[in-house]
Length: 293
Image 1 (tube, rainbow, N blue to C red):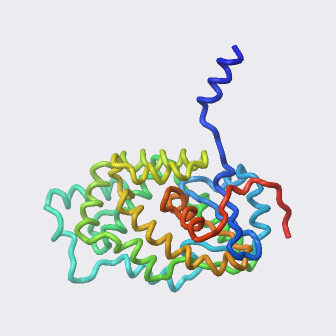
Image 2: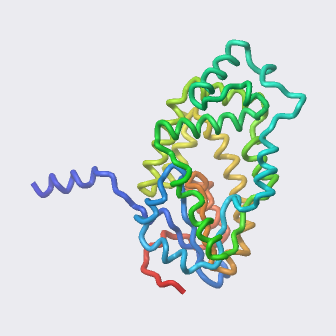
Image 3: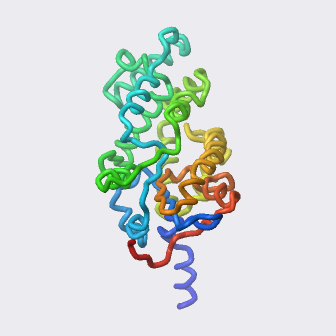
């Protein structure tokens, strides 16, 4: 009976929340820094389940994220970058039937049609549509998301906040990393197969809650993944991780950096954690008791 119970326990999913916060040290750093994997689909209350998380945050004197949302001039520039050039029209890239299909899907899901959205880049429309799908099917709530939580806390505490991407790089990642014709194809695919997007995001969310960052990377790069975030996107992220590793070097040498980044950037052979190890840093799950400075 005991043996049977033991085997059943082995088959149960194991929650390893500690594997979502990593300590970075060595390579000449003056003190430890920490990297927190985030997932915008997960409520910020989940942060309470990560052991010692707020104590680690209390040991740090700066917050580093992908792109600081407190730079309002940059945010305005991003809004402008989402708009199509005057010389480009969506109707030139779709048949009448496909254009009407996209229009009807937008109306049903977003309650806005292409009469209002046709001047936006397809990559923007894809993300807009995906986000609404997640609101409806996965109960995504931007107000409760963990994504920018520590950035907001840092702002309240007057802690410096640094973004790893420059404005132009963020524009490129959001709106221009795919050729325009591919953006149009991706938008049509999301409209045709919304359940794939939701299923993929649900799978990643489950892996995230169990601290399986490497599994998330493999899920994205799998040949079976035909969603809007797939192998080609991961290759772009991998290249950017190399640049991020260089930009993080100064902050890590100083120590006391609290780094919050989406989980899709961190795991796998080309993830940021692997890149930092390759650069000479010691990166390990942070799971010991700590005290605030």
